Amino acid sequence: MDNQAFEMHGESIQSSSKGEEWPKKEERKGSWSLMKVFLVCLLACIITTTIGVLALSLVYVKNTAFMKETGVTDDGATSPKPGEKSVDIKYQFLNHLGKSKVHNYPGGEIQWARFRKDVNEYQSVEEMEFGKSINKHGSKMTFGTLRIKSKGLRAPHWHFNANEHGYLLQGTAWIGVIGADDSVVTTYNVTAGQVIFFPRNTVHWIKNVGSEDCVFLLFFTTHEELQTLDVDDAFFSTPEDIAARALKPQGGVNFIRTFKKQVEDQAINLPPNLNELVQNATYVQSPDKLVWQYFYNLKGSAKYPFPGGIFQWARYRINGTGLNETEKIFSESLNKHENTLTLATLRIFSNGLGQPHFHFNANEMGYVISGCGQAGVILSGVTANFNIGIGDVIFFPVGTQHYIKSLCDEDLLLILAYNTGNQLETLRMNDYFHGTADHILAQLFWKEQAEFKKFPTPAKKSGK
Image (tube, rainbow, N blue to C red; front, side, top):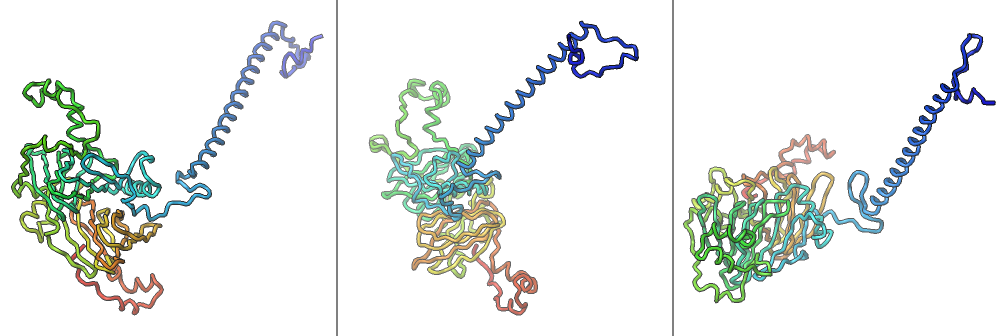
C-alpha cells in the first residue's frame, strides 16, 4: 500500500473532518516531478559552490606561497628572504658608477646611473636600489659618462623626453646643434671645464677634435628611461623611396640604396678608414649670440667662496644679476626651455664642510671628480651617512637635509646638477636654527634658554 504522507513530502495533512478530499493520483505525480526538479537543481548548486570554495582555497594557498617565495608582504612592500641581507639604505642615494656596465662602441663608451624597467639590466641590487630611488622620488635626472676616442664622433641624435646638460672633464670637442627656429645650425668648440646644453628634440653631435680622449659628464632631465634616436637609425628606418623624395639626391633612389647599415652600433662612431672618407674637415665657430644658448664657460665664471670651499655656477639669474652679456644669453636660454637644470662645480677644501642644508625647489645629483669625503642625508624616517670617492654618483631628493665633507688631503671636487631652471632656493642648518626663537629651542631640547646664546649669528652667505 502506498504511503500517501511521503508522496506529499511534508505537506500538511488537513483533517478529513472538514470534508476535503485527497488529491488525485495524477496531481500527486505532478507534484513529485516538480520536487525532483527542485532537488536536482539544489544538488547542482551545492556541488558548484563546493568546487568554487576549493578552487579559491587552492589559489590562496599558492598565492601565499608565492608571496613568501618572492618576499612580498601584504602591504606591497618587499622584504629580504630568510638568511638574505637587505640592501643598505645608503644605495638609495649612492651609485658606484665604476662598477656599472660599460657600453662599448667603435669610437668610445658610455656608463649609466639610471632607472631601468627591466630589473635584469641592473648589474647589482645596489645599482637597482639607486635606479628605483631616483625614479620613485621623481628626480627628473639621469646621469652618464661619455668617453669619445680621438677623432671619434657621438653620432648626430636627439632625445624625445629629456634636455641634456654636460660638463667636459677632459679633452677638446666640436659641438653641433640644429635648433627648431628656422633650423639654425650652431657649432662651437669646447674645452675642459666648460658646459654644453642641448634642449629636448634638438639634433646635436659631439666630435672629438683633440689627440686625447674626451670625457663628458652628462645629466639628462628624466627619471624614466631615456628615449633617443640617432640620425643613421632614422635614415635606415625610412623607406628608400621616401628618403629619396625628401633628400632629392642626384641618382634618386638608386643613390640612396648605396648606403649600407653597419653591423655594429654607430652611436659613437670611428671608422678605421676615416682618413680615406674625410679629406677636408672644418670646425666652424658660430657667433656668440648663437653659441651661448648652448654653451657656458663654467671654469671662467665667477667664484662664490664659503668657509669650506668654492662654488661656480651655470644657472639662471633673475635680471641677469652678476652675469656678463654672454652669460645672460645662457641664463635666458635655460629659463626659456622647460625642465632644464642648474649646474655647478663644488670644491670643498681638505677637511672642509658643505654644511647641512636642503633645497625647496630641486632634487640634487652629483658626481665625484676628485678627492674623497663623506655625505649624509636625512629624510622622513630615513638617515644615511656614507663615504664617497672618485666616480661615485650621489642623489639628494628635494627637501632632504644633506651635507658633504672632505676627508682627504686633497680637495674634494664634484659636478652638481639641480633640476630647476629657476633660481635655486636653499636653507642651511645654521640659518633655520638661528632663525628659530630661542625659547622655542629651549622648550624643544629641554635646555635653558640662555644656553642658545652660545650659537653665533650666521655669516652672510655668498655661495649655494
